[in-house]
Length: 535
Image (cartoon, rainbow, N blue to C red; front, side, top):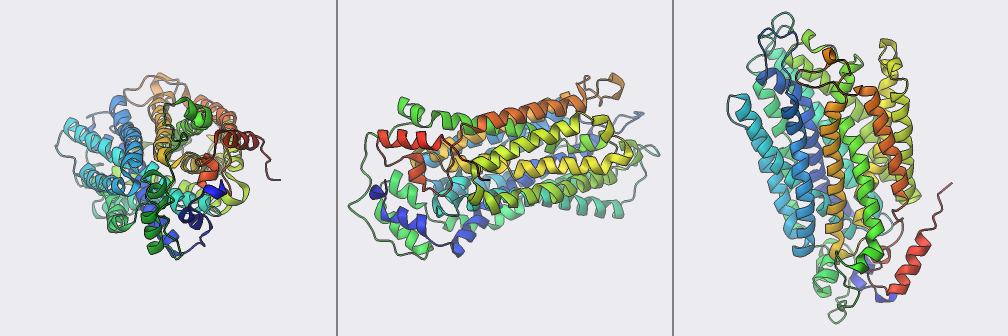
């Protein structure tokens, strides 16, 4: 294959790490910062929305979002994300990565601001407009997944490609952390400026009128980092691999890369890759034979991961309340409740989420994608069962710190594990003309898992005792059994990881077999099926 490799692509593979690589990480990473901020900030304000818009006079507990409303508010952005991943993933292969990249960012900025401006005074008006704008916010976020991953993989050299793609994804950790910090600052400021009694002392006065500004400010702040990087996104050239292998213009590819990377690339006017029998489409037998199992592996692993990851992340507040780490809602005013939920989420992000991402960045090109994903699913399974089986032990006041440590470790190994690798691998193992589409399909399968987690866990985690459920919810299977189910889901992730090939240290064309004949590809896939894990 090396003999068929275009000079511009070979130059990219062996280029030294330089400033432009880090610039690309920041530009693409800010999109993921906003993605994570917007998707997770909603979990910080759902209890506040319940207090403001669903207060019932004389009720023992503060207002709570009804089951269908809570499911819609938490899940509608995921539905938009799933649709966006499929649409923009396909569009990125048809029009080019650069042309579509700006659309997704503008959609995220506009809809993030619009979410906070949801209009109306009635619960129906506010929630309906919030859900509408969050769907389209999710649609823009969905486009960022395949495009950012593909752009970074096609810019990177083969030695540090995994770390660069993982670094883009790791900005999610800072997005989650920032969502918690912004909520802490805003809620503390409003609590200080507008003191209020607890709900049990004065139900009406416990939620001050100014609380309606709090959730809006928190949601709208997500637009700031995305808007700041729009100009630089528009200045990025098209990736050389798309220009050379898909648009068939090696001369333009060489010119573009010479401008941004400090490498001498010779223009190859007469060596554009010829259209061959190798140019198969997505819905062909040849694709199914070469990459069918790979696509199944990346899609199912991402689906299984997100069931557990998003259900745990979105409903941290419910888990913390159930073990008593957050006091009963009636003992607090609205602002103090937002503050405590944000504090808990920020601690989890600081202790488990953010470090896990950067462990992956540091080690992915040394121990490989396969080993990290397998290890992550294994430890997520272990810690879920460790939380679930002795669950009543963790609910005792003296054991809450232990629960927090175990729960943080679950997030640590999700991020130093499949949450990062499921994003990285689909951007490496498919041909350039289908790379963005296949990444979009894999990511959409993940969001289908997130929808299952967001909607399913909402009901499943309810107490088996009807008197202990949240208002409007039927009895569920309880937090303990829900955690056991998540442990089983993670175990299946271990099995499907066996379908995913290792991409460490190889060029994108070598991994995908893009310029090789059928026999060479089959030999390569046979060899890659025999794995050796690092000791």
